[in-house]
Image (cartoon, rainbow, N blue to C red; front, side, top):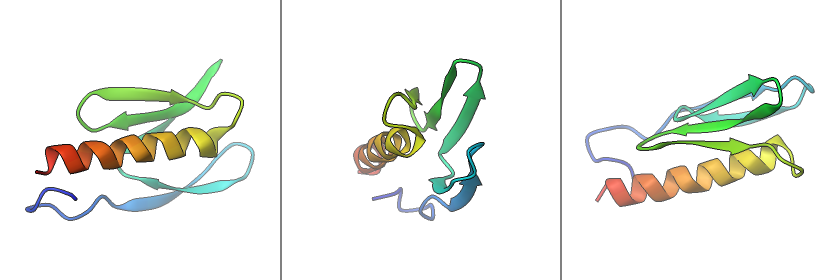
Length: 76
């Protein structure tokens, strides 16, 4: 699923301001700007996933799904 010459993305824990901790892949970073909190996928085109009504975990799940699709597509 990842490029053959690279190890899979590393994951690390990230604690949010509300105290919850999520496991986040290295290709996704957290943005905590006033009025626009969310996740930015930095693989290929940079894409922002705002937290929205469903919260940070749901937005992260969307970013991870897109990351996996991009890795599968670009890794072939």
